[in-house]
Image 1: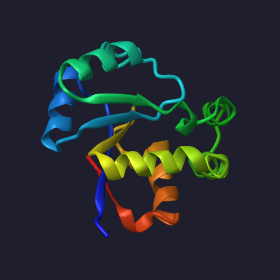
Image 2 (image 1 turned 30 degrees about the vertical axis):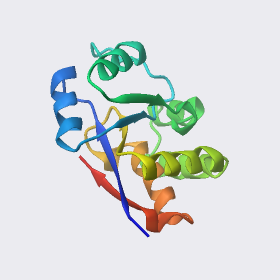
Image 3 (image 1 turned 90 degrees about the vertical axis):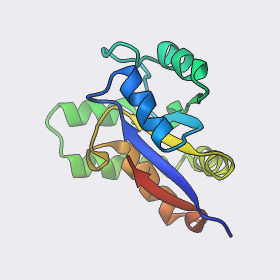
Length: 148
């Protein structure tokens, strides 16, 4: 049974070209945007602009809104909530996203995928919880998660 890399990254501190360079350095074929709301104040990183830019550079863009953090959890964190509680709430939410997680595993075993959100440090980002849940699931032996 082959093990497939699943990369994760954040775009903070990047411009579109440096972000593309990062993806190319790891031969990423599909970028999976796991932001609930794929908009950004940072030029080039809102859904349409990013999708067009990546497409023009040979990388497929997939938005998986259901793997983003629900508004209620984000609101609680902004109101002074604890990051540990935020991640626990998100883990619980992901328990209802089996089909989306299965689809993500299938995509990652067919192509070189990278999960993307804003934060540079995966430990401070919900994408680390997505990968944690995947690595605790039935397909854990299929994936090797690498934060880039």
